[in-house]
Image 1 (cartoon, rainbow, N blue to C red):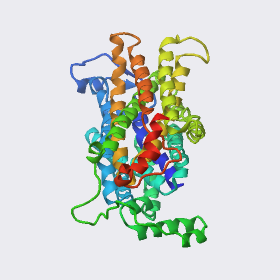
Image 2 (image 1 turned 180 degrees about the vertical axis):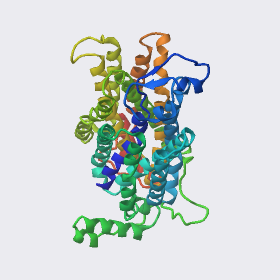
Image 3 (image 1 turned 60 degrees about the vertical axis):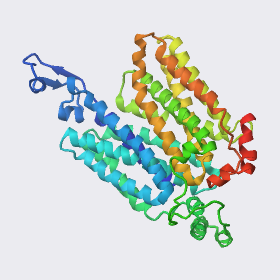
Image 4 (image 1 turned 135 degrees about the vertical axis):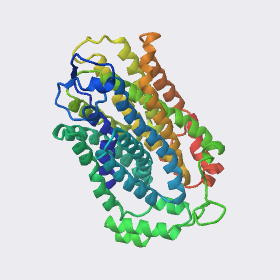
Length: 469
């Protein structure tokens, strides 16, 4: 439950720049505008908004600094995904998670009390760095606390809570207008979460995959007792995991980042998953930008972009647990439909009707790609062995951030042809859906703990033959 609620905090950090970087309406009086210092003396803000724009006059030639702060956050997320994922596979989930959470809270307060834009921008980079790694580790840790039968449910609820967090942040911003107070309020729950997470046990799956069988048994017994099942706790006995490696052994620290591209099975999966994650991000942010062109209350808009994702998650839970659909086919279908919605958005006139118009189709596409995003998180977790799961998620999430960074530049392709931007989103969604069909199905299949299990011919007969199904 703590892992689910924690997503609200991460959503607030991710969406923070949307409100504290709001650009209000303003008027520039006539006068000497020969330099920027003279220009800001003649600026009058006509909207009651308190943001970094109004405090540091980030207008005209300085307006790019608002977008730069947002880009720095996601650049930090990208680096954090790559760095913290393999690190947690090496030294454990809990120490990496707690360290990243502690420093994200510290840098979050640095954001709220930044004396200058430069300090503010640096703090957003560092918050993104910690947020990127911590979010992945938190997701994997939540999954590894429960049995594989519950992975789809916990993964879906985690992403659903993130969407709720976006909506709650919109409401928080409505009632707390000063940007420094809003940044402080959004960051403060992190202190409580850190204190609560200190008592969490290490991942039993990570302990087991590293050869710490007795410690894994102790964690499972602790979880059984907390669940009110003392009889089951006494019966927990684990065999030594084949191919497991203790992190304390000299000269062999287990699989690492390079194994994702040197191991035959992992290389194939990693390359395909990287493109799927990249396309999910590109289509998601592309549709979001199209929907955000509507005028209206910015706080309502932030909440709406979170709430519109909620219907996607019950659909995910229903389809991915059906034998005739599964993870692979459902993910591919949602991606393909999201791509088609981009095509329809391009073809339908703006004033087509009250319900059937470009905006409603764009929001429908966002719902569909949100469903695909949710599935790819769960699916990727099941495709990687425990010993390298965080590293795999980190690389995939890195390609996801690349898609998000490139998405704002796609609309400029309208100079070539008016239909070009949405054609790019359409082809990205459909091609990623087709490529995803080449991955193996994981529904009701055993989860691998080590690379030796993944490479075994017995496991391949169970899993890899699903490609042709």
